[in-house]
Image (cartoon, rainbow, N blue to C red; front, side):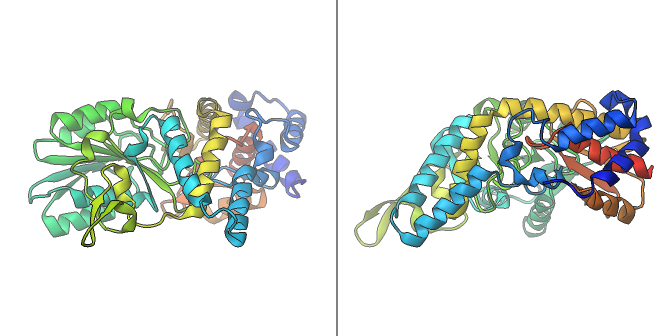
Length: 415
């Protein structure tokens, strides 16, 4: 499908061209036009996946950090699930999907299957952790300002109910270091919680040193992984994190309602559910008594959302086929070029240089409504934060240099 706004995009790109030669190596509007024409027709497809993402036909979709679009194989899996549910030929399809998804996730992210529970939302994990811990007045939790809103809500409530101190670290130039955490961590610290990759600026934490810091003080480390799963290869055992959770609807390209929750094996004995239900039963005993599950599956108290689980299974198979290492190499390099291009236009960067993630954010200093309108006209999808002052772009596996050029061209046309 041809983009009806292509002419306006080329005009905007030309206006910002002089500021971007270090990023694109272009010297004329003719070169930009030829490049845009090639890329918009799908020639630039480094991972060979753009055909699986119909969103690329109409948009420069740089917004996976908000919601990742479904690839066709995942859509097809959801259709097949709905058809099976409609005719009821295979009543075990949902159970097969959850078993398969658990196996795939464990293999892809370096965990054991019994260390994984499938929750409904990322926030469920941190709530379970907080509920299972024995808090005392004067204990403290260490977080930072790059975290997601849910964490602040949760710990402010814990502060109110249990007298737990919430220590919040501000970033410096978009970064919070291990030394920053060390300065706020002491013998009364019970938990350090980070967004593994920040939803605000994409800053990516190095988890093992944070885990070492937490463990040296007898505390735990939790990582919100919703902006991390699927964006770079990892082995959860090697990361030494105690807990991690993230939903499927962003970089895993699955759907809402299936959030893999990793609980390191050594914590499974003391970790207790925050609610109870029939799926926790391992064996029924006499007198309406039960032996309950002992692995992370004991945190799954009710039937899972089988549709989202089916999407998760298909999405993980898709990721396996593409290769998370290839996804990281492509998206991180392109995000780096986007950051350089925005900085060349005079934007005040919130994402630090050399940051190994797919998210880039900057303060644009422009009229928010004018910029948002221009981006919409050119078919560029991003997220605005901080009352419109902060622009966040997210480079997915299906994005290419042409998508980045479209964003920079619009911004350059308004500078």
